[in-house]
Length: 148
Image (cartoon, rainbow, N blue to C red; front, side, top):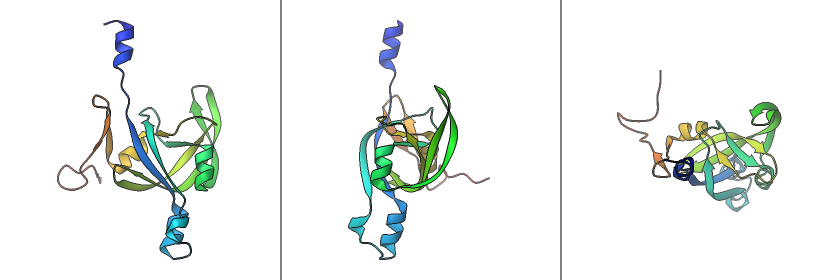
């Protein structure tokens, strides 16, 4: 098989995600704001990036959601070590599974990415052959939840 044929067979997984400002959700639960005031976005065709550990969002989405700035960290990138802003208190829903996460801010114009840590936490596994996410069982003898 030639290099061209090989690269054509490389597959990727995309998914639909819903990101919500967790503080807004809590305020609505306690009746400080109404449910229609909760800042939330549904994004389609978000790339699952198995080489990335975290959820990464562009600055404009972070701003739309009003996510809270946490700290600035240094991260290794293809261009070397860069300072990147970390935001916290967001709710992430994928394939009906929901969890609380933080995210890294992507430079302007880049598309959102889902890394392996949110996927593992939500019990989701990329199936590159079929270009989809597998929802792992969360109950019974084959549960993805592990406790050591």
